[in-house]
Amino acid sequence: IWVSNFLDATVAAYSPAQLVGGGTPTPVVTLSGSALNDARGLVFDANGNLWVAERSLGTVIEYSASQLVDGGNETPNITLSGTAFNGPAGLAFDDSGNLWVTNSWGGTVVELTPDQLTASSTPTPAVTISNSAILAPMGIAFDVNGVMWLTNPSVPGNTIVGYTATLLNTGGDLAPAYTITMSGLPGPFGLTFDNSGDMWVANQLTNTLYEYTSSQTRAGGTPTPTVIISGVDVNGPEA
Image (cartoon, rainbow, N blue to C red; front, side, top):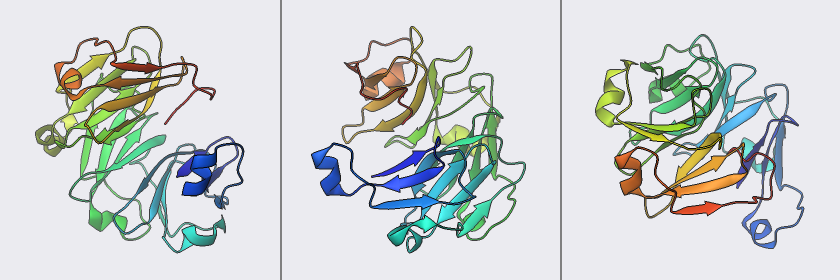
């Protein structure tokens, strides 16, 4: 498992054996260097390269699979920068190999095509989505039906919204197809889907994890989570 540590400007990896034992293991690989200052979202591409959303530096960077073997102070293999990024926080690939990036400070989600991911550049997004429903999008994940889900923890916030594939092809100022409103102040950040298609959400402000079924996510509204894990042994879970 790979973990972004924004407070100490590193990205670290733990082996499968370390995940079983728990405790305070030393990472088997640690990436560092001037390209990492506020590392947030992580995602692997189909070739085993690791992409990192570097929020404060306004970049999306890629470490090649070979750079992940030993780690250390590495210069990214690819650095994407420019006006496409404003506080990049979340990363996800769709089934076509396009990379989607949430801009937590810019209130947008942008799509980069595979051709734009082959070398360092200042790319112009193929698609840009904005809306009052995503003032500060953070987490991002695709479900099995190709719906893109985003967390929005900012004011008015506490929502999770979904965009269908049809909407993603359109871009522009678009209202989401699905909206889940979360009661209280959970502060939804990271989200992912399990093998059953259920959504799991990390709530930073309340140190909880929520699970929603696929039928609940499509119904929208303010559903009661099917599972709530509280007392999470971290301070402010993000992903």
